[in-house]
Length: 286
Image 1 (cartoon, one colour):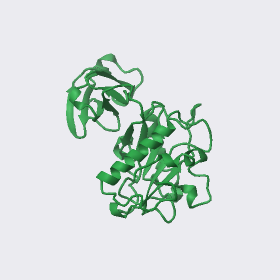
Image 2: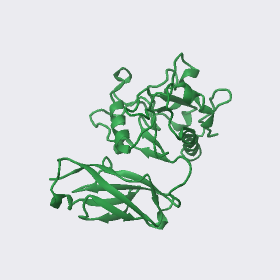
Image 3: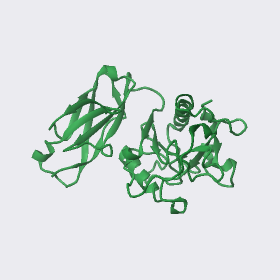
Image 4: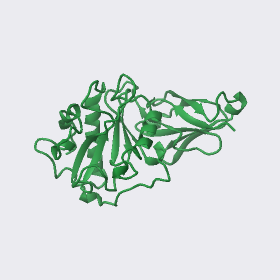
């Protein structure tokens, strides 16, 4: 039986327009056309089903409802039951050429965290978070744009690798979130320990801090084309967490002249790389 393994689609979908999604990889090479035609699609907003299309094949051309403007939709192809692991997320916008970074958050289920490796970290009260630390992973892309990432499938793969990349820190992603600067201008945040658990990122600050690590080596060039906008977008996301999600004390501990720490502020290290460190003032959430 043919199963879908990967799917592609736009990061932005035009409200009232059309968006095209494509099943790009299957569990078998050269799947029979009659089985491919049996692929179903479902479109969800949070847990709500927006639309479902049965047996339409490997390509979905979706008429995006105008009333979804400003929402994020998840589009999933499937044979029997949809899975967030095989999905793509699109933000519904009024102008497909909107300037500025968009934030896309991938939960652990979105990126396919290994279920045999449980999420680590102690539960931390949100009111106890007082600071933000910025890191870099020093793991680069294998093309010419070493600090920039092209697709969500690649992001998901890298997040799974991070579960076991530092066994000395435990077999889990050591950071609360990992940030991927996308070639399309978006900033993707992959959930590691998450908002409510301690990390293994900064000695002495693993409970009090939210840690975001940028995937790449930011001691080196080239930089992502939209890095400044992506750093600004991270600040906006942190502001939402502070104002809407119970992190009222976030930022009460901060370095002079900035709202976030770089790892090198408290340790002799290059982290988060000179090029990100020089731009930390762009991350503003207070």
